[in-house]
Image (tube, rainbow, N blue to C red; front, side):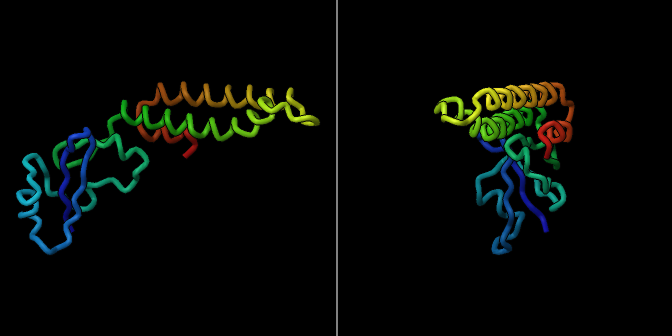
Length: 136
């Protein structure tokens, strides 16, 4: 099976999966596409982690490293917020009988963990290394 790829107006890559109702060669004109490629299924990455960083490069799709780092940092921020949440509640609500010092110590460890992750993402020279930094 084949697919159509093209760079969309948002700077990403759109993938058209033909249904078979219209010949694949006729679809680009029907969709008003001028800069597109008809590619084999395996030209489209199966890993969608950095989907919003895809760029069309001829008949292939590549992941833009700079855009991937931005996505990685957003993922890092979300994970950090999730880990902070229970400790933030203890600190902000000053819940009696709960050790605020222990909560602050946990928050410090989380800050260190994610500062290291941030540095690892910043120096990554591939999306694979960004994923390793994120632990995925």
